[in-house]
Each structure stands twice: as structure tokens, then as C-alpha cells.
Length: 338
Image (cartoon, rainbow, N blue to C red; front, side):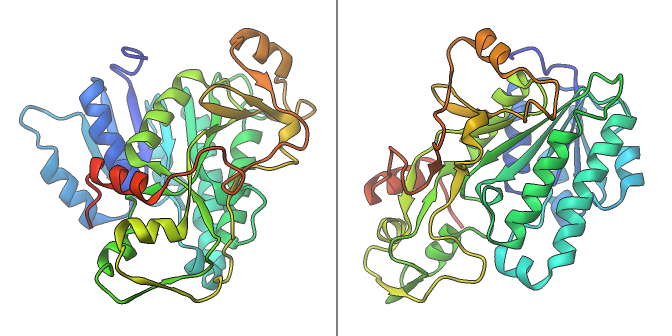
């Protein structure tokens, strides 16, 4: 992978967000891209990024103002692009419940626009970032991301003679991302009471750097049509409170609309098509749906095995849990400050 991304043109949608900012910083440290195109509708964040990556010496970073809802702008931005990383999304659960069609327009119609523009411009690879909320969704955000995942998987069916590959990366809560529960805890750590919706609630955990490394790995390994799922630890939400605000008392306020008690990344229904590796899972596309041979995939990779039927991978039954002390160390190591 070391040299495969050198002299490539990369476009990242939502590139001014938490993941995008970390991805760009890491990419420029490891590789020498021909162009690194940041596609985002946020003018102010674009401006701040321009201050970070100066043109002395000439920088490969390009700043494209645009919205994934605008297929013409995407078409223009993707000219001569080799790889697309699609991270743009409306993701806040309560806001999505109140503004459903706005989320549909960005997360579903925007995904289809990415697909159309990528095929039209002969892009080599497209990786779409997803969420654990897309597995057996109970909220609108998760439902839109499930549809988005289906669109990217299905895109491998109608690409024609193009060699383009579409794959999806699904992972859990990103520690340190904007608007996360951690940011709320840090801001309120000196308060007497901290509100938690359910005392038994669990979540998956991945850091921004880990999520970026996983995406790099998936770009290298992707066949097209699969959903990559990393093996990551879980934590109890109450333990996260203890890690950041140990002197505060926990006040249980009840689960919010669209919220799950436990998150899931591989459902029982998906287990029949899931392949297990040492550090991650691959959810293969339905063999009746795509020319994708699961047995051939396992034989070629060798260091993997099919998951048992009725297997599920959720934050409650995870084999690895983080203690308050573990969480505190990760927060300090990754310098998560808000």
C-alpha cells in the first residue's frame, strides 16, 4: 500500500469534517498524491484548512465548495479522479428525526449522485463510510445509511464495462468526532449531574486515527461490493462518564427517540454472508445479486473463515470491553480535547 496511492488523485466528500481532517493530515504524511480534493459545502472550514496547508511549497490539496446533492458539481469535481472517499452525511439522530427528508436528500440522493458521477468519470475505487446504526436501523439516520450502503453495493451491478469498484466501511462511534457524547461530557465534567439515557447502554469505540487506518487498509483490499467491519472494543456509557467526569452523579433520563440500547455492526440476518478475519469482518454481497464468489474469496485470502449462522456482532456481546481506566488512557493518548 506504501506506494500505491502516490501520484493518485483523491477526492474526499465531507472532507472538512472530523474524519476528513484526520484523513487528509495522515494521507499527506504517508503519500505524495497528485491531487487531494476536499469536497465540502462548509466555506469557513475550507478557509481554515487553506491556512493549515499553505502553497509554499505548492500543495496538492484542492478546495471544492460543493454539496453532494448537486450531481453537476460532483461531476465537475471528479474529473480525472482515481479514488473517492465518501464521508459527507447528515448524522445527528434527533435532528434527523425532525428533518427527515433533508437527511434523505443528503444521505440517499447524495449517495446516488456520487455513484453516477464516479461511473461517468471512470473513477477506479469508491469507498463509502457507513455506521453501526445502518444495521437493523431504528432511526431515520440509520435507515438512510442502510439505503446508502445498498446503493453502493448495487452500483457494482450496473457499472457496465467500467473497472470501478464500490465498497462500504461500517464502524461504530468515533471517539473525538464533532458532536459526540464525549464532547458533551468534557464540557459538563464539573457539573454535579450528568444525564445518561440508559444505565445499561453500550457503544462500540474507535478513534479517528484507527478509523483512518482501517479505511486505508480497505482501499487496498477491496474487491467491490463488500462491507468492511472492524473488530473494535465496546464500553458502557456509564463507564465513559466515570472516565471523564468521575465526581459527577449519573442521572438516568430515558432513551431518546431513535436511540438504541446497544449498537450492532453485523446482524444475524447478515451472518450468512459474513467472513471473519483476525481484525475485521467482511459482509459479502448476496451471491444471487452480484457476480461475487464467497468461496473463491475465502480461498484466495486463506486467513479467514465464514461466520456461523445466527452470529451477530453487537456492542453488548462484544468480547472486549473498555474500563473507565482504559477509556481515560485512550482519551489522553489521542489528545481528545474540545
